Length: 113
Ligand code: 5GP
Image (tube, rainbow, N blue to C red):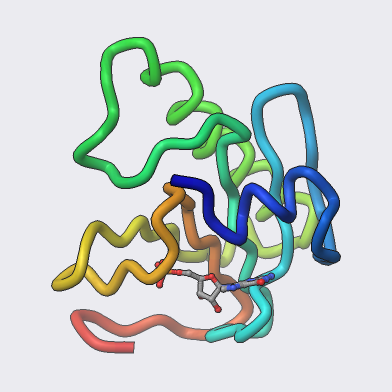
């Protein structure tokens, strides 16, 4: 089942793209929760974390490598940042195409905020 993120990958919907390679696309979240809030997604359609299989291990690793690279490029890698992947309803997932949230530029707290 395709989502709005497939339409962003296919350039049917505009997004503010910050990183792209053969397997991954990263773009600014339309409703940012931090001064920098980037969504990093695989180009392959995978609905949730529960749907990952062994063959997806490499691309999921690449999502994290891209997060660290973007954090370095944006200049907040050393001060710190947060990466989050929500899963299903109680995890707060609203778009069913896996994505890493990269948030930086403010102090994060835990568990809320
Ligand atoms: P989730 O709630 O699934 O973990 O995160 C989905 C994220 O996608 C939300 O932070 C939401 O603001 C973002 N989002 C939803 N639709 C769009 C869109 O069309 N463009 C962009 N750039 N972000 C979107």
